[in-house]
Each structure stands twice: as structure tokens, then as C-alpha cells.
Image (cartoon, rainbow, N blue to C red; front, side):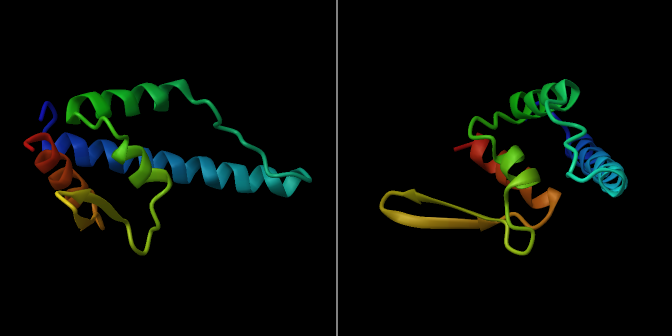
Length: 107
């Protein structure tokens, strides 16, 4: 893994905090508009940062993006079939995500 646990966790925390700020800003804008604005669509800084995270963790399946934006918050479980057996991992924290990515890199 090309990124330390501390830097990985700090980076995910900052992404989540920035996403929350943007959501708050969009909520405020929505009160002034009739539609829900998409203020931060196509953020190239975020896109570049996520690409760097994927590269430094060898995340070829974009598990980081899934975890941040698509995984159910109450049950972020990832599953796959290995040798005919379904295997599941619950990625309930940034630490669990980091551990999963480290284990996947060593397979």
C-alpha cells in the first residue's frame, strides 16, 4: 500500500467534511430556488483526489467511491464469489475500508 493508514483516514475525513459543507450550501441555495442546485457537479479536484486514492491503494474496482457515495450507510457490506463461495465484508468505518483494501492488495 502506497498510503499510510493515517493519511488515508485523514483524506476520507476531509472528503466527507467537504461533501457535508457542499450539501449545506446546496440546502441554503435550494431555499432561494425552486430546484435543487447541483453546485459541485464535476469537481475536478475531487475527481483527481479520488484517482490518487485509487492508485495509492490499488483500488481497481472503485471500492472507495462506492463506499463514499453509494454504499448503504447502515450496512456497507461488499460481497463477492471466491471459489464458488460467497464472501462478505462489512466496511462500517474508514479503518475497515483501509483494512479491506490492504487485504485485497495482498491477494
